[in-house]
Image (tube, rainbow, N blue to C red; front, side):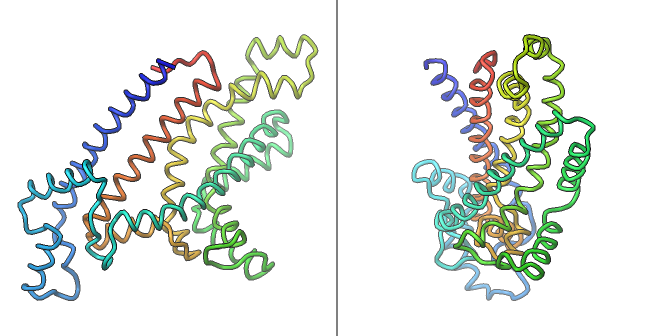
Length: 309
């Protein structure tokens, strides 16, 4: 327990340092881009632009803006007000979009983990069989084809031809199923290939051969001696994969009309919404760091030889 607490405290320290570095780099890059949140095709009268800059503290020197925003984030967890969404704070935007992206991500990950591991195990156990060739071909398809193409094909097949799911919207299980499938398919393909590779490597280990030589049932050997070790690369991949899926997919959210975080992130970047873009970047950084920490903990649980350092 003491080692665990010490490890978590160290990771927390590194996360805070990483957040500060990401904040600094993002602040400099956003201020380096020509223009400001109020510049666009329709010009704002100079007097109104000065008032808007004063409201959002954009008339202060850059160093003062840097410090004021940082103090607000550290002391009050206040990510500021969106400069493009009227009467919306960044905290409110994240609070509304995050549950949608998380729900979609959970369904996508459950599908990806179950389908990917199952396909990888079958391919490894029945190597060079028809099932192996078909499953790995499907995995290559899932990796190579962009998810927006998969989404378009899925809509044509399951919305217009077979009419099993609605074309878009949010709130019911039928509206979640199709975008979750499209979002989780590439992840499932990677998991299937990683599981197959790990399984084939573990099947050559001496302790696995010994287990087979002792006459243990094939299912017992696979589940107890092969699969836990084969899942280590999968667990390692799931860290950044979970963070990537949690952020949502802009294209999928647009195609299926989902009110998630991805569209807000891209809109903030294209519209020069400094505060919203910064809030999204910091949120994604925390997610990625948290997922990688959970991956390290899972490593130690799956393989007792791995020590937390």
